Image (tube, rainbow, N blue to C red; front, side, top):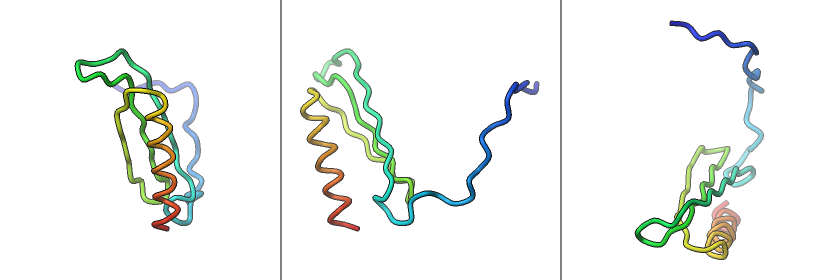
Length: 79
């Protein structure tokens, strides 16, 4: 069975926008119902240059912000 796409997919740009690790990162945060351990969400960070994925669960919004800040600081120190 073949899918019938109504639109063509985006054309590849050829080269990534990031030249070095940490130049461009993509961040997504999701809030869920609390699980049995008390976590209410998670954050996903993807580095565009290396495709490295970092994830972390959190219990509060402040913890998510702290994780994001520490990850950005880590990239600045490493690269």
